[in-house]
Image (cartoon, rainbow over the protein chains, first blue to last red):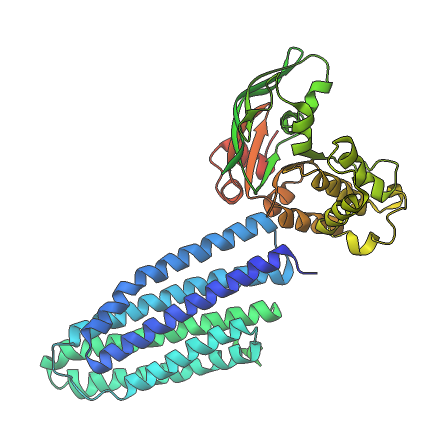
Length: 222
Length: 251
């Protein structure tokens, strides 16, 4: 029998999806603004962040309301608890997209230090991880969530590549490159942090589906 | 829009003040729950709306209860009309010891609403459909209503009110004799009915109030302590007494 709670949970599901779409858009636009040196697009990411924050509050309130009014149990309470955690990860991801957009604004009027190679690669990994983490949540797909968790080392590897190149090949050799190298360094850090949040989401999805906490126990992934 | 507007309502049973300066607005086509510990006045409050308290000796009422522009507690109020308009469902389902058909036809006949047999049958079908009993009972209308299950009896009692075109449904602990599954189904029916009716439900079961209602009033010792959106009452009540009650710290 369809319970009234099921209708409310479907609504919550839709809200998280919407939050996911807004977040993915923020990452995409922030990276595009860097590649295209497009100030307007970077500014749009900053402006849209208010909507993301508003959505986060709305979802939080809804979750607290559902817990208070329905006393959910078993998979229902795991779903709501997961939705709350995913909500906060998504909001942090959108904030990191804002950070990238701010760096992109700083760089827009200066000549590019070097052609962008590994940062776009890292951004592709980050966007894919976020998208798959949200898909895993939507489809209650623990296998896909595991794939996301296992992608994280690739993000770390790319971030290290960017770090080493900027530090060794540019900043160490010519101090005048620092003001253009540091923003790129930070962007690689922001992108890698986005991947960490996607990993959190994926771990929470595994908990939601299997009632199994894998976070401090990577061996449980298999 | 407000369906029932209560202003400065006081009620005494002899010297005992059962309701003390109650003010509250009950919204049209919404479910409002009244919660509170035993003896707080919630059932008394409900019975004011269709003047059931008149049957108790020594009752005295002051204040105003405006239902669609008429003061229900004024001595001039048309009680027959009021009780048709504002129907009540009780804790224990109380079908008449008649057939299912006659249970619904009874109200229509005494109110002189419908005497034509075909039209009567039409209203009975419509009422039973609205409470989702028609498909199960359409071939058993001549059977005694006393043979129905508790849940079916409660649905039949609701159907009786729908037949006489009540537009306010008062429910006093409507699920307290039902098991959790039947309770869930009656709650679902309430959500369905609120599209067309204003429902006020009194319940001991706080979880039920939380699940089913749009607005909630918390009563204590005859006072309406807090009256607000259910979401607010159960997540961020303003009065400490409300908080103590809903978190189980009262008393």
